[in-house]
Length: 121
Image 1: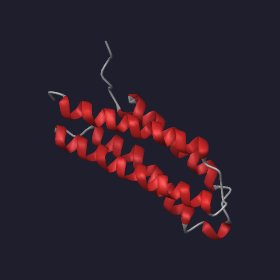
Image 2 (image 1 turned 120 degrees about the vertical axis):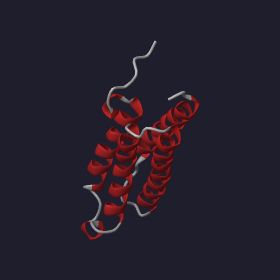
Image 3 (image 1 turned 90 degrees about the horizontal axis):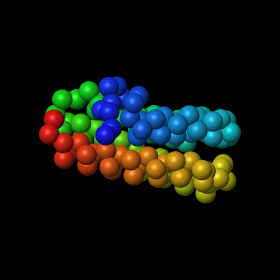
């Protein structure tokens, strides 16, 4: 039997999302300097939004409210998918590993949101 998470950092989905953010920061350090306020900032902001919304939703009291924050995180996942595609098409990076981590985060978010909606809390 799984022990319920006591804080957001205990959630595997948050841990994977945080790992993704750290990787995004490392990747974007290699982007051209003129992208500092463009793609670099946009990708970083969207990436940070994923674990931030998981953390914020963790302490919400209602199922619908918690699920809404997970849905917002999922929207940020899709935004990141596009930015990684754009970075590849512009020749800034080959983010294959990041895309794999992002896909895992997406699946975990879907499962976590589903579990929230099915729970009795």
